[in-house]
Image (cartoon, rainbow over all chains, first blue to last red; front, side, top):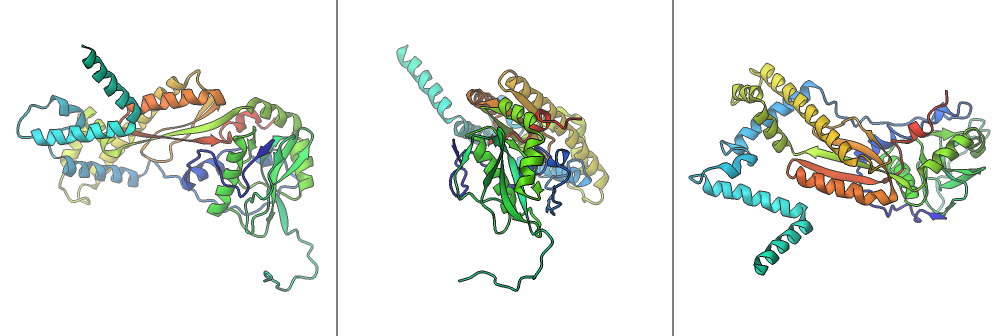
Length: 128
Length: 265
């Protein structure tokens, strides 16, 4: 059996960043000193704790700040989920913008499925 | 051009090099030559065999600390490229033994049956880590609309001096943090339920970012990968604009070796 490409370049789809690597190999994996006592070399390992401390005042203040920013960016336009129920009126063009953006995103993510669905709809209409 | 020809200490009783161990594979595995490992300069990856087992190792200078980004990436890349071909028991970063003989005797021989059984169990399986991050705006909108109390707090701090309303801000932020944690728990349950019977095992990783929505390691058979992808596509559609999902893998089964070859005691 042959494994690994020369040069160590990984060919598999493993797009992990350094933070992911750290969280994985410094935190998980078999720990050797449970098995080997005599000849384990105490080499100095530079470890960086890349973890965000999740429950801290800094986190709280950041969230509060994010909520504040939300006010400015969104005014009284309403939540994206409520857009569909808005009455046509002064905000009509704004509403349309939001919906368009949402549709674009949907298309980006489910490109194939969406196109298939549209195709199927069109097909049905033609058959009618 | 000759590299560093500095004066060598005459007698050198202290050990200068050690054997870095990446992980264990079956004894019949062959390696390509020329793959480099951790350390500076990095040593070539070799196999130390014993019985039905082999360890992936390279020589390192033990007078220098390990842990540069290159070291970390080398460790993971080597194990993750191995797992695409054969089962591997990954070691945590930083295991160095005095010599290849020590690896053969104290690591492989001493734990032969346990390691061999774990490798058999991992045959044809790999780890995939699913991570989802909340889109901040979307999740904050959700929380504010679901919690009038939070919305009221927001009204109180709107346009005020941050220092004057620090208390309320912390209160609001703490509330939101809790609400995100509750959503994380619910969304993780949803993912686990969707993956039930579609994976060999799963481990929920502790959130490391305050906007983590899901962070779960799955051990899957090669032929279950399609199902994992289908589940993620389905959840991705459902969470459209709310959670950004990503999948990392195939990876060596870092999250599953602890339980497979648990410390015998």
